[in-house]
Length: 280
Ligand code: FAD
Image 1 (tube, protein in one colour):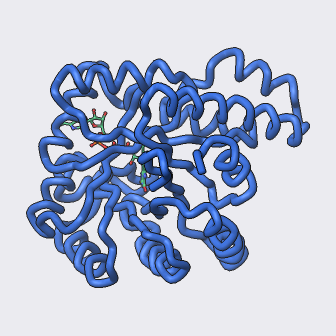
Image 2: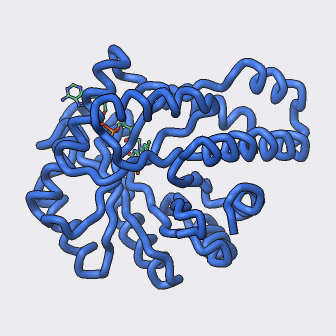
């Protein structure tokens, strides 16, 4: 934890091939110097990265990071999830990011024994008691499948009632959406920490694609500024660093309890952002 009492964490994904594995190890080693409170490792819904996640979690632990595996329930059997939870417990994991997940297209319509993240949170509590600190996902700009903001909030509150300890948000660029979400939660008596998820801006096309999929709005002025830069990666990066570090500053000043950085397995941009916004 930083001297401010706020939590700062990093997210990685399991590599798909040897070159990506080497890049991840290099990035993770570079980021040891940041001393994050913990790092998390994503999990492909339907088990598509199961062994990659388990191996990456072990690699991160060996580098000395407190490591939180993501776990998703869609398309999974309870027995398989129980086995993963027991394995993680045995290797000293104390924190899980519990998600529903999205089945990759082409994986059929079998959603498994659990349909929502709430069911997974309840299952983890039933199976592992209070051993794990459970993080869940939050959507200040609404989950893309939600029919209304009110329902989405109610479903989030269900996850907290089922036993979630804290939450990490989908990324966003509108700080007001985050504060509105936290205010609405507090009005319902829910005061678990909701940590903003922070996406760096380095690649215009990639950001547009991610944002389309996950329902994160890129404000018009940011879109237009990025469009002006064309293929000029250095200018995109410099502009992105300014925009995202200002967002982080605003969030921390107005009370966000920490930040969770989506590193995309890239040390350079996250380290630059971290240096600008995380109090020493
Ligand atoms: P839920 O909380 O179950 O919500 C999903 C939708 O269902 C929402 O629209 C919600 O309102 C609705 N809903 C919930 N309960 C009910 C109910 N009882 N009745 C009707 N509707 C309901 N995906 C991965 O595959 N692997 C990862 O590692 C991963 N990591 C992530 C980390 C973070 C921090 C975030 C924000 C997202 C991550 N995702 C990951 C993406 C996530 O899996 C997707 O956003 C997914 O579509 C929803 O997951 P959830 O856990 O939020 O689901």
